[in-house]
Image 1 (spheres, rainbow, N blue to C red):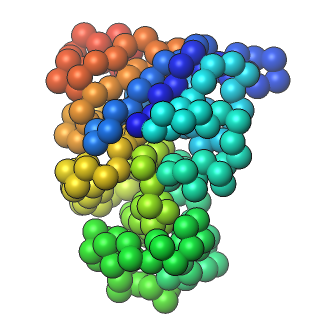
Image 2 (cartoon, rainbow, N blue to C red):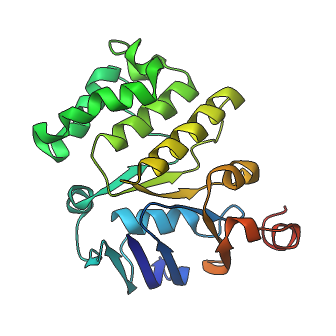
Image 3 (cartoon, helix red, strand yellow):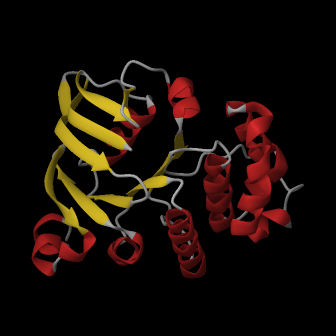
Length: 231
């Protein structure tokens, strides 16, 4: 569904990504892992078009997207949940959700009932301002908003960060439901190892802007964790 080939990115003359190769197959959940500051978020921003690569290629469902703007990539099927959620705090939950429908017009409207089924707490808070929700509720809203764009791939940047354990469990269950439905592939940046082991199919680990380990999630053993993830 998504392929990065030899992707390189530089900021102000400093190389951030160094020939990243990564593939997200259809109907799968891929975990991108690594210590802080190794290039994970930059990789995601490159995928959604917020950062332009200086070399390499990106393809979505077999089509090159590296030349496209972020809104064009969204319309082709990339749903993005950034680190920190970035909901609109002064808009209501309903308004936050409704804004996502502009990606495909009214065609996306049929998914509203589905996201409220996945995140029932939002149904009770449709008229509340996004800024008064708890961190966990805001994260659910951010994921629901991305799903409403009817994506082919859902790109999430550390959705468990700062979230209480029961909401982490809910998010994990929701991602497994989405994966089981088979319509949306998922690329997840995450540092919570147990969460990745629970929901992931495969993993990539980054260090200093490059992929240093990859494989099925079952192969993520203690030796790899100690070498590349333990702080």
